Length: 332
Image (cartoon, rainbow, N blue to C red; front, top):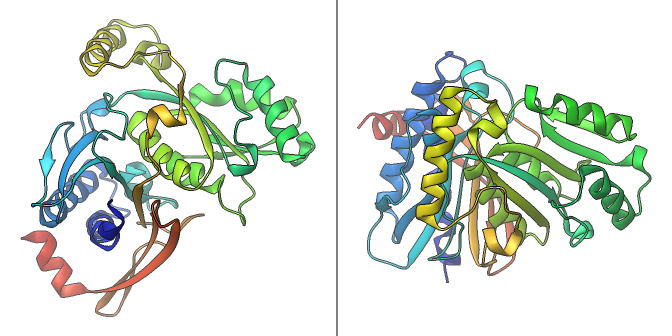
């Protein structure tokens, strides 16, 4: 049981968010990511749990990372962690909204272990649970989701990422009569919004990173939603070129080593095998889900969403941090 680790893991994402905030608007996403990674690593090493990183951001674009298989922490329960120290590095570098520091922790063996590669994702909230099937067309899924929700198509809202690879999908959805909200980055936040009662978003469909997919699956399961996904090779997503084919071969080899298969539909229980999870997301910049880090005099304030699957608790944790202490903490 890992519920008791909630506040400790909140401190992990708080520190990562504050570290990323130091690079807010400075145009250097690599430095922001590196700072958040190091802050997260340091705090995880202080946590009273033996943590193993099962999937993390970084390999897909050679960014700083908590590497897959890395072991952190002190004596305590053995847990798996899926992590993205900054979900939205470009948004942080450009001072844009919806950047988060996120992680999901679960009992050992509970989370999908996969390379950092692309993943196709379809996510809905509790009311549409059981209405999705990624082996069917997107159009058929939209029809089934609208039916499950009792909504006419013009009232249905689908979130996706505003990427060139999604432009045809966005046009297809709009021709079907649904509304499309295209986020610049950040599909964990958009996934969560499908489960929030005060959110307009009914569905997330996108091709994004696998680490964000595993993080999302853990919290979506705890919140009673539904998700299906497929791992995709680089050349399928980014186009057929010598470079992308080489990367795709490497990804296929890594998948074989880890016992997972690209282009195979994974249901929610295959990605997150247990609802006994702890999920923590701290806002770096203000967004649809959380407030960002704010500097008020000699204090920094943070806002964190904490979901504890075992006790079925959802908390918003607001914290004040002494600025001089945090600057010393993050530079040491």
